[in-house]
Image (cartoon, rainbow, N blue to C red; front, side, top):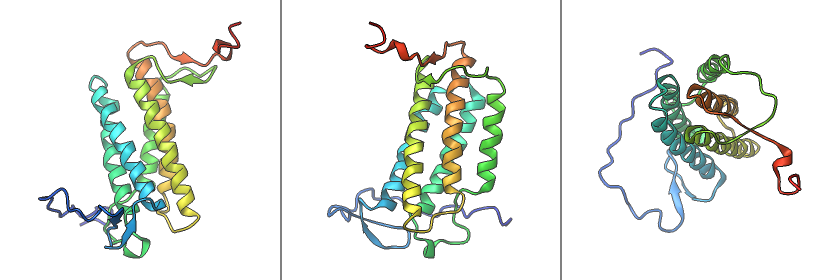
Length: 202
């Protein structure tokens, strides 16, 4: 098996509830019981939240197969990231899935590819225009939150070397993809106009 291929999961989910979390604790991959409000849990919980929003965006992108394929791939990558974040550094298996420089570089290629279709911006963009654009902006904002949490965790514990870079690049990708989604269907971008505020309209 090539070195860059991760082990396939070997799990059996026969019973969904175990009652073991009823006292506010959960179990890491290595078996450690920890409170559910610890920073590590908050990190991979936010990555899971992001994955849910991406799933909805991928469904909305059914008529944009190039973008949809990117979103679905990112879902798998985020699940890999969640797996590694749910594992203490000393328990990480050499074949455990994670995100690497390969995933970061692919995001950069995807980002550049779709950004080439876009006109330069003359103002900041607001979420809107289409439901898909707005959903991708939600993904961007949640991704930024996941990144901030992971940076905080990195000040306390070791985190995967490319994980922060991956989330940083992914949030940039969501911004480009949101613009591309509008342009692809001919929707107007919603540009920030400071004087559209209540005080500015007076």
